[in-house]
Image (cartoon, rainbow, N blue to C red; front, side, top):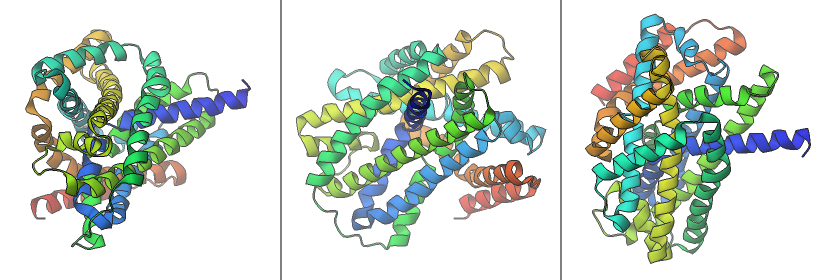
Length: 384
């Protein structure tokens, strides 16, 4: 294999790994919920979803890339204590009391029809599996990019190909395009992917820097990898939203959010569809759980434990708390973090834009616009 072919292969592997990091519980559930009510206005809902769940995460990846994957330096322009607080919130929202237990609850919902295992037992077993798959970061990237992500894409691709081309047309929507655009925008917010982008950059960029001689080469690889991941996310959201818009009228009422893909897959493929849906959900959540456990345990080790305990103790603590928090259930976890992230999201978008402007054009302004955006986000949440 030539050097150029090796570089292309590395970019694709990194892009697949990055996609698998993002594509977890919220990325499966919220496009389905957006599509459920969108009907014939699915394209408007997808436009809103693509802005908050594709463009904003891509913005975050570019911003953190320009800071070499150093999240502390990225946040330092806010001042010492605001940076510490924001870093803590970001880490916790994606860590063992936020996104990680949400992933466990969705994995449990996918396998429960076959094994009848309790959430408590399942969360203990799956966190043990994630521990062993995460303990070696270099092998973790290879596992994500070369094995788990292709399996995930194959299962989703099968569902999309059969479901979209053979499915019924979506029913007409009584609301206008702007309403469904806003619903898509809100659904994308709930995926938490801008916050995830900033954290995943701290994992991906040091990985890409190994064996590359120049900063420009690392940034080029990161940009192409990010574009591949964003493209795959976009295709996945389009497929999930259209599936939900087409098949929701055929489903019985009262289906739980975490069971929605399973119900649609059975409509598309019959009893065998449940196995396809189970595989898609389980792989999507497992790949993201592996990535988040690596990110949070690194934060715990460096920022809170100050290097004590090696790598095993922080990872073990991360997954033990995850197993406990998973028993709150999907909706219980969202009640904790939904309001916090809705308030924080606008200020993170502004911070990303201003940090990019700082690196590219030496624009120094940052604190006032970010804090104004935080105040606006708070006001909108309190007085909608």
